[in-house]
Length: 84
Ligand SMILES: [Zn+2]
Image (cartoon, protein in one colour):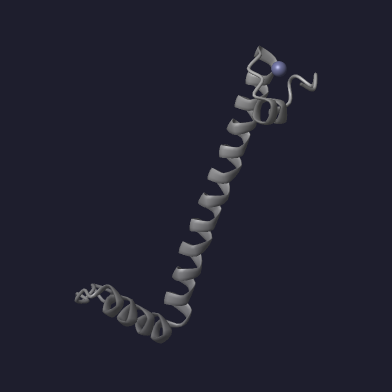
């Protein structure tokens, strides 16, 4: 075994479970999860924002997509209270 303790790769590839390697691996996974969670959140925020802009700037396009989407999921589109 390569004596490279404290690397996530040593934990993963050499299955070393010493304190240094376990710590390195758990830190690595923590960072990995954090990064991915943030990017997921950014993606969904951007998607929501883009949808909002389409709805505001291109209402006819939005209406068309909404009709299509409702048709696609096989649900009836309820009249929404835009103009309250
Ligand atoms: Zn180790």
